[in-house]
Amino acid sequence: MGMNDTPTSERKHIAFFGCRNAGKSSLLNAVTGQNFAIVSDVLGTTTDPVYKAMELLPAGPVVVIDTPGLDDVGDLGKMRIEKAVGVLRKTDLAILVVDSSKGFSKADEDILSNIAERKIPAIIVSNKSDISESNISDSISDNGLVKNSGYTVMKASATTKEGIHELKEKIAALLNEDSDNGKVLVGDLINAGDIVVLVVPIDKAAPKGRLILPQQQTIRDLLDHGAIPIVCRDSELQSVIDKYASDIKLVITDSQAFKKVGEIVPDNIPLTSFSILFSRYKGELEHQLAGVDAVRNLKDGDYVLIAEGCTHHRQCGDIGTEKIPAMLRKKANVQIDFTQGTEYPSDLSKYKVIIHCGGCMLNEKEMKARISLAKEAGVPITNYGMTIAFITGILERSMKPILNK
Ligand SMILES: Nc1nc2c(ncn2[C@@H]2O[C@H](COP(=O)(O)OP(=O)(O)O)[C@@H](O)[C@H]2O)c(=O)[nH]1
Ligand SMILES: [Mg+2]
Image (cartoon, rainbow, N blue to C red; front, side, top):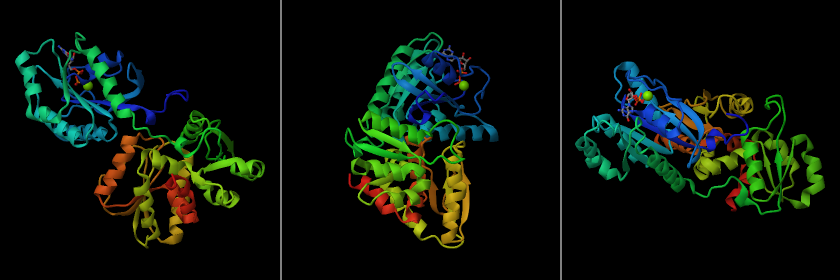
């Protein structure tokens, strides 16, 4: 995906689930009008979830996900099923594809319970309407679990395209219902016409020739709300303050420059960071704030997990693998594990705290699911920005603009 496209993390994720040969890949191709998923009658053709960002009309920018069959067998099959189920963590809309010539299977029931438990919007598609006998297809709508779930069952055929148009309309309708949570990144903290200063240190870890996603998104949100962003490096901040101090309504800094920026910005100007804004936007701000207490209490020998949502931001990488560990080790001799990208340990129980990145490359569902897993394991979770602000001694100050809201 290029820089001019909607970032993947801001797209709704639509995942197709179902048994092997139910027609997941065929249906996905029919709905998207593209031929990117491999269709075959060889069982188990899709071995890893396949992602594709696209413009799906009338829904808008989405990511569609093809997944391995849920009735796969053997040790490898089991691993493929786990991967398919793992996709639920980031699914905004699930399409359960059932082969209506065969009926509703145990694997279908299992995934449907899982989808319903997570309260994920879903559509059950009774596929292969061209070859199914109507009594079997009716038995899908009559299944007790299906009825209880309240999800819509739609008949379709990926082969004849019967029902595909209706399915696309339903997909758009469900995504629309879900999308209007009214959350904004920063726009509600300022008024139109306000000057907001963004501090972006440009060091050797900064990507060549561009800004990183959280910076771009913050600038865009400020512009959407009629504010006037001034973007500068930490080295120019003092002169920006000297020129505009009385008009500046908010300063947003990259977490790694917190200490220096905190010293330069006068106390009467509110100060926060990109990662704190992102925690509020797609994490759980108060829970992650409470998680900082666990950093305060770290002792020698404690295990800490530092989790990074992407694999390619050297800047975040440096913060996660070098800066924060160095800060923590000044407090206690802790054992640190690192994870990157889509990895996230299934057993979190040994950790005293999880320090997560701001999650700019993860969709909201995935970030929330990671927080839930930490909650279930009883492990506090916080983020990079809060941890650095806390250790630097300016946590309270950097939370003020947000908590006062
Ligand atoms: N008759 C008929 N065959 C279909 C339909 N959808 C898929 N198939 C066939 O079912 C087989 C498996 O399809 P595929 O999309 O690869 O299933 P997947 O394993 O769930 O991804 C292929 O031979 C398809 O051509 C349909 O609506 N009608
Ligand atoms: Mg397939």
